[in-house]
Length: 299
Image 1 (tube, rainbow, N blue to C red):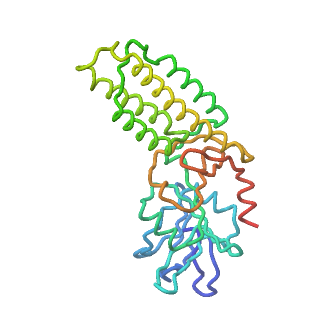
Image 2 (image 1 turned 180 degrees about the vertical axis):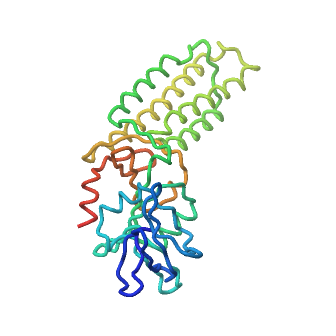
Image 3 (image 1 turned 90 degrees about the horizontal axis):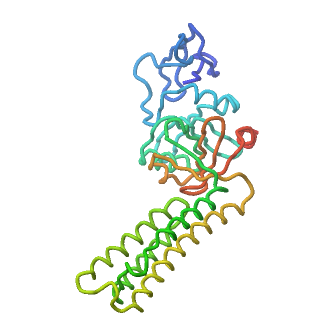
């Protein structure tokens, strides 16, 4: 912890060699730890607080918290109804807002519990431990178009196609409707593969009883149907890009290895290298100035 309370005055103290204080949460004795390796901090003399959300503070935490007034840092808050008590990284009093800096992995249960307790919360997570990567959204339209062209080149020759019966056509269209509702900048490739794989599986199912040249009209119809379904998925993916770009700012397509964050309901900012990104959806983020962020929430 960065602060402890003076035993006599109750004022907040930063850790300095030789100082002693008490914990703001549990009033237990604390001692200043000021070595050469770890950042200077306070530690409990005996058993630490039982706050299950406590995370060992890193230099990353300390640097972020230094952007905010000292009296806002490590704010002890409690639920009057349940008696539950936790220490928030930052409490912005005029907005009644909590900012939590998350350096390490966090469970889904912990995310939900914190959001329920704090009610109004912003997450800032360290990308270093989350396998976060970004690509330009502006370039994604070109990427989708190139992928589309690749599939057009791979379209099976008409003489190699087998026709689909009505039941199979209905089944394929139903699958398409399910996939199109979930198509975005990340899923479109998997959805394309799914459609093609299902189509080929259906073709294989009729190979034993039909000739490749039998019912030529149905063969053409099946080929047109496949192209139609693939085309609509590409269009939905490009529409997703264009809708994102309507909002002013620099947008990026991102991937985040940790799946737990999809359960968060509150805003999530990712600190990646020297930049900050606000997650706008499960695959698009917006570049945010760190200075702008600190100015917005610290004044």
